[in-house]
Image 1 (cartoon, one colour):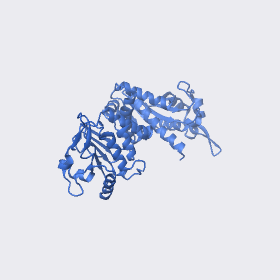
Image 2 (cartoon, rainbow, N blue to C red):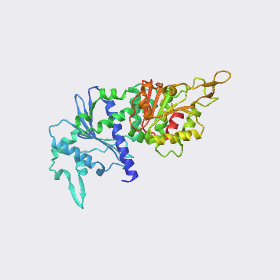
Image 3 (cartoon, rainbow, N blue to C red):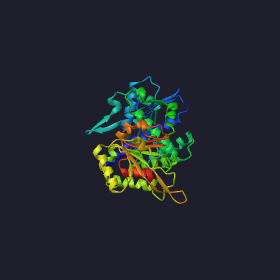
Image 4 (tube, rainbow, N blue to C red):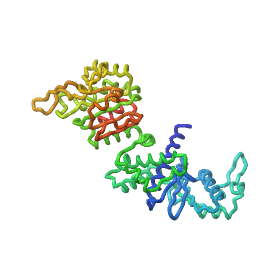
Length: 409
């Protein structure tokens, strides 16, 4: 598949997800429901009505019979196979230069045109080949509606505005990074379930699932927004919660995959030195500032090499002597500091940062002083090992440079 075709496919998925979110928000009753990937892409079930929708985001400029033939055939065949159902059928298809309200009228003549095509130089007529009568075609058309879909960004903005209204958001940013992200996660989680019943959700449960009061970023959201925007978003999230204030005791957990990544742009010793400059720079840090604690998920030899680099860079760290015999008392001890003459700033400190391995943390968890803030950068789940007031789990940073941008932007 070419890059352009792959991009179009991904955009098509997002368009369907956005349409699903929009339809869920538009349901009038809390008990009304939608089934994702049911009979068609979206099945809507209310107390008085049942509708199935095929959603297409097409790259073609204009409506053509061939572009809508396959989805209409699928709907027609389902209708013919289920003559007693009370289902309504909708084809919701976007074309680049078509606007809602200008849809072609699909009567029986137009329908037969759509159902007629050439295959291997032979004219085919689906309705004749399948022995579908004019009476059946007429009956189908009474149940069928064709709607031009809105342009991608226009529809997505409509979704955001409805979320903003639903949850009384103070900004588009909040609606996007919190509620839209959670809505997207719920729809995708439902879409991949094997059982049809598991792919069903009521409006009440959808709204409840969105309103988690915390941002649960997911891979689809990152693909849509780009890593650059993701980093900006989570950095703003941290700032808004005041988690990065220098006076708060912070643990930064760094997963193995990040330590082993290509960190040539920001080597570990430079990363640590820059963090110190940001949060605990001598003669600049206020007297209540606290050194950051870094937990590294790596093997013994890698850990020793990292510490060797820090020593060569004259970075004094507290590791509780973990390579000899770990002492939680030494590790927990506050740094001995010298204050400026007016007592407002730290001009000297017995150590500048705390640093131990994940293995040491796991083995001595009960004896290590709990931080105020725990920030995890790892693709793996890291449990809330401390009873901290603030816990953040960021899974989509790939390098130390990514982490540094999150913690300092």
